[in-house]
View (cartoon, rainbow over the protein chains, first blue to last red):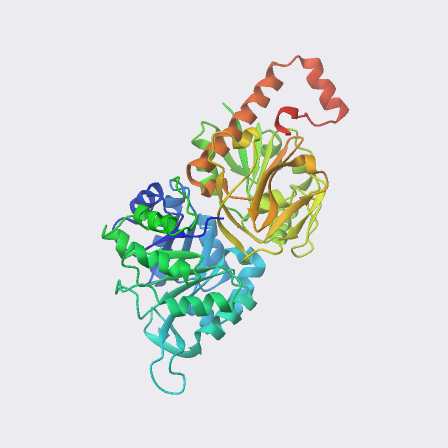
Length: 241
Length: 226
């Protein structure tokens, strides 16, 4: 079993189709498109990007941003996505997860959770779900939401630490351990990757896959660097492109 | 030129499959028309969805009988492979029944759904030239009645059946259209298989061909059965 899967997100940096193609040839095991803006007018553009990517890139594609209904999900799958991630819309209406998983199977429903650590008050030391790209607090506990999301039909969790996102200070390992111990579905760790050692630490903490974006976009390190570090630490990785 | 049809039953990653097959030099058409499907040199049955959704699409489109009676090579992918069996534990869906057996939920595995790249142990011609590492995303896998149809096994703590071949029906639990160069090679192998069969039927003497049709038996693919 290949454990230390490497996983790349693209967030409007450069031509996404070209980037996806480059990452696939460099050994990315999955590509994720997250349209953080996700305004309705962006969605058509996003679907076009997915369609063009799917016709020339032969690795798994996850698409997220602005998915609000099973029909939105269907459109993304038809465009060539393998998995679709939902975030804010699922928090606002959790039945979306049920509706999507019963129609398309839970294996293609990804619950994206943005988490921020609570540093004061009665819930000090826990993590809270934040939505709308991290701008809105919800008062929902991340562990509760992860468990509930899986019960409702999520087949995978894309877990982003909003405290670490963009910092390159390393993944939030406590958060990763907590969530991977709380649910049975695969967990993709996101937010904070800054060096090959960070990927190893995240997988050691229990992550089933590790995601990074800016690190690769800015060519601070390559996918091969991450895989080499994982392999050296004893985690099986896919070496062929 | 080998002419392949990717069945459009409403759920499945048609774009990558079609592009992958076309890269091998096949002429590829995406269709839900039984007449078009029946005339192809080979048929690919995709599936990214719940089993009941895929079977629902097949039945609603009036495609079940067409698919069941195909004599040319058929490649089922993921749920498209699962529906070749008698039935699935997922939603209790009744399936096409062209390969005896049932589809069961994986058990004793570290995490479900099983998502990721894993090795396929097998030596079937479909796998030739690949590094045998493919991308999986599923919670169910087939349990064939006849072990002889198994051409690939995968170890995800629980060992499950990841590839099958029975008569002209082939199936893979993984996604070749998502498995990089290994997957493209598998699709190319399938195209070659269709081309050989297509050429053989064209070149074979008419009586034999008619006899086979008349007797209502599927062509045998002994070379590919093991």
